Image (tube, rainbow, N blue to C red):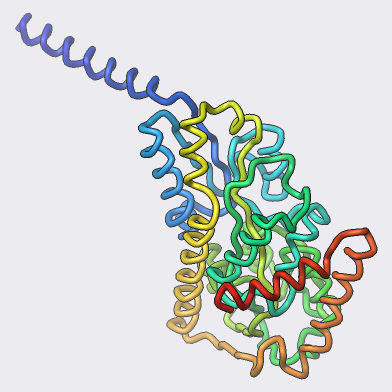
Length: 342
């Protein structure tokens, strides 16, 4: 019996030492927070694989702790949370910080983004070519991406023309999209994606601007049985970025690990996930017997195009008035839209 107890004690001590060694193996722990739920494809197919690659290529010297659903900071505060080192890495929507990334948000304008892979290629290239100015000087960007085309999803009635939007309270993701909605006759209501389900459930809003991925990730197909696809209407930009000081303090070999988990390859990973999730979200609505109305010609439809063109011109003029090279960036975004497969 004594021998058994001694053996058990040795085994327990060895197990504890093993756990202790494992916990001490990481030189750096990165706290990575984002807004999506842990069940979303965005978390499972982008951020978890990113964390896995970093841990594997660093041979365990970098540990990544993922915090989904805005656990460490509310959605509008996530970029600043990384800047101020409340967390080390985030994936967030630039447009949640109004007027902070105006050149980046040019990709939100109608007609730029056709698919998430293509849009992500556009945005990542704009950044790598230095066309977004000093918008990200206060953090260390890893990769940028967009979702696919955004659409209109409504709770009570189907929208076919802009006149159908008159007076409707529609969730807008950013002020750029909000201005577009105002010009179309709607009443835009600003809120981050995680708040939309409850707002729709309570009748605070009559509709939502989301890609099909958002409908899937945030379960909005449950509440919005009417869907209007205006091809090329808008798309949002996203960034995965890191605290600058945390990155700069890494030894060179670990910086290389982070660098390898950055740029175009990961921008494309994100785009592929969004396109896949868009297909799943749309199919979910079809399987539920919901109504999907596709506007002929999309953003170029004669009933929609004049208002959308006005919104584009107004945004570009506003930025040019502030001394920003908006038209140069817009022209390059249009060219990249074709070069990237649009």
